[in-house]
Image 1 (tube, rainbow, N blue to C red):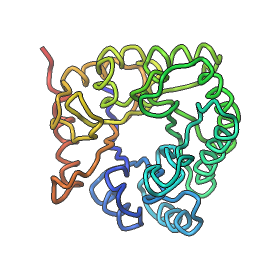
Image 2 (tube, rainbow, N blue to C red):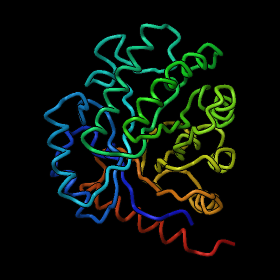
Image 3 (cartoon, helix red, strand yellow):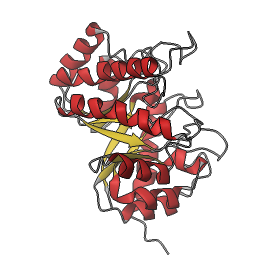
Image 4 (tube, rainbow, N blue to C red):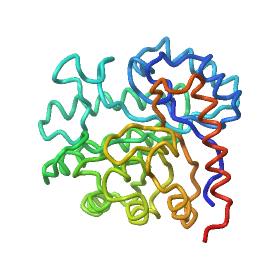
Length: 283
């Protein structure tokens, strides 16, 4: 079973500024690695003061920064501040695309202060329609980004998201079209539940998956619920994961909807339940 460690995305705390005390809570909970979500109201990767603060903390602690989630917006308001706030490396309009590449590079520069292994990257925005020119734009973006990342010891992972550019079939097509044989995948189980289905989507990408985003929903909205709150068949999902050739963590990417007074404690309960289910014989 490719369940080797507990990993957590700081998306759980995305409505707060990411600070050393939050990281300390995660470490004290026994979680071994984190993915930092690059939303500027949470982690402002272009703010030297915040980067230095967190870098100093990581140097003195065992918690590992495994990955960053690439920015989706340039502002602190989820893209609502102005029309050009969205980060989209598949944007066909050249100037907007280059601005998105530059924004992504700013996030990658964090590796110069806090080493991390992966950058999780979206192709396009939610519900974006497929056009060949968007594949071409994404390729033009990823060529310099991959080099920039490699120089800092980082590998870029593409994520399946609910749009026509990022279905498993399109991601495989993109990999062949661009001849980027080294592209690997962060498999988002909640997104798969909204599109082609968890097991078939995972089976299509299985040999390329090196990281995950684990959360639940009821099949209608990308709620980032805690596992077992929605309608994902977790037994079937874990059985599919068990057949993967790569070793990867089950990394929780949750949203705090205010339902739990202690969401980190609830996350630990979730890990325990997933771990228990993963070692239970399946009929």
